Picture (cartoon, rainbow, N blue to C red):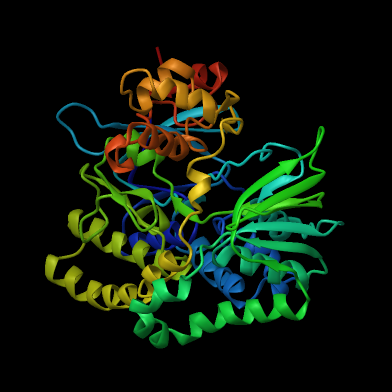
Length: 473
């Protein structure tokens, strides 16, 4: 027989753990599945093992805070299954309610039934292709930080960092504490950031502690003598077989080349929306962050009944905001499940909503300070955009000129978005290229239609699937 739970939570980061703790507090049966080997998500990756070590100390207080939440999650009574991939979510049986969640672990597929599904999928780094970004030696800042957190891997050679936003600042400070070296920081934030952020000056004063963290990282970077190149508009990675040089262009058109063995890029983060798109949830375009986010009600429920979103997958806000969003979703589900009256849920949610508003107060200022680099949305023709199918920006532009196709027609013409990542790495870039070629807003162009399976699935896994004692047809 298929296992049945009141709630399946997908993702064991800050939001997923917080939601599970809250749901268990109301007596609901909860299954938490996560692709990682241990709880923590990206921001608190491997926190249980790393927090007590010297690496945990160099990663900072904000990282170590995750260990306490992970401990409470372990003890809350939720069933936790790590290294498990969810590859499809379907409606329950006709006439019934809930969802059927299909997943795989260790080569074995399974279908689990649940009354509610909570998607705590977090965020991903915004794909920002540039010439040479597929060369060995070119990584994202997030990937480099994973290596630092999980195994304290520090590049032996000085690294170049290209991009803008809080994450590069944090990583550079952490890398320097770990004994690493930085060849240079190629800052892609457009000039006039503080003028753009001026409307939110009051929010900055109210959250001076958070602002102080960023200023402290900057002081560490400056004290180390890191070369800071401002006003970078374009970047090119060069080399035969691997990265050997980096070339960057400034706003005045001047270009400079420098030797490089490691180049780390980052242009902000965006909500993970693959599952909400596949479930045909309604989404809205966030012009400030240049990305899509699911439409949610006050309790985190999507336009699809019984499907809820918590954490950065609902909109970028950081770890603390993700925890609060997870708690709010737990209250909303408990209310729908009859474990909490509407009055009690509203009363318990009030302080959480106030806390969330405070935690999100700085977000508009950060969006104004660090908008995505314009050239990352319109790479040169020779730049590979779809890594899975090795398609260039030029290939996409040619397809976009055939009539007035949308992303799904371009996918059919070129195979862009048909690879293992299913458009996670190329979707936004393809949409921006189509919008530019057709002189339409990106929000109007839309995104790929996402089809199952949501993650790569072997025939062996599919054949192993049993539903109520019988193998799947």
